[in-house]
Length: 232
Image (cartoon, rainbow, N blue to C red):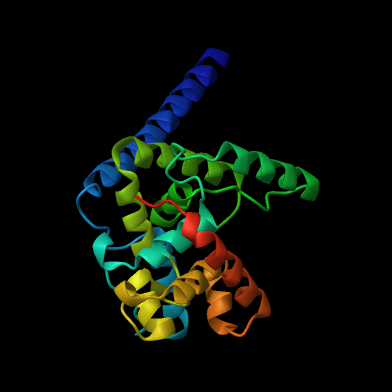
């Protein structure tokens, strides 16, 4: 009897492993496709649209893809300065940033910080949810390795700039520039770019609270760091 139980357990474990591997292959196939094809949607976009359509079934996202060369250099520098100063140096993970995040999590007794790089944030935006859990962070790490293995830093930043959230239903640099400043992404000034970068940790909140003193102060600090930011 016990042999049969162990046999079924073994088969169940094997089936679970097979499903996990198939899921990773499905993700990797998408990553490979996106080397030279643009994502039409992301997990974060789908979640944002679902959230909007709960209130208005006819709601649509504001999003328009623009190539890397049509995005202001100021925004590229602002994003790197704010989100990932070592973007060109690491291979997906900022070890020092992770150490600081671990210390903060241990101090708080829960997962409150992730030390995420731009590559990690892109992995999350493309495939995952906004929840904080160790399982999700593990999957995020796997996807980050995939992105870094097959994509250039320029392509990673290009996709990130085109899918990042900048307000309720506002995704990507072009929609963000027009929504917040009435200009195309190519024409963003350094000050405007710094403000958009400052919004990223809480884009929907700051879209509703544009007069936030903290937002203004954070944008000013980003502006001061932008000249030294290295971008691909």
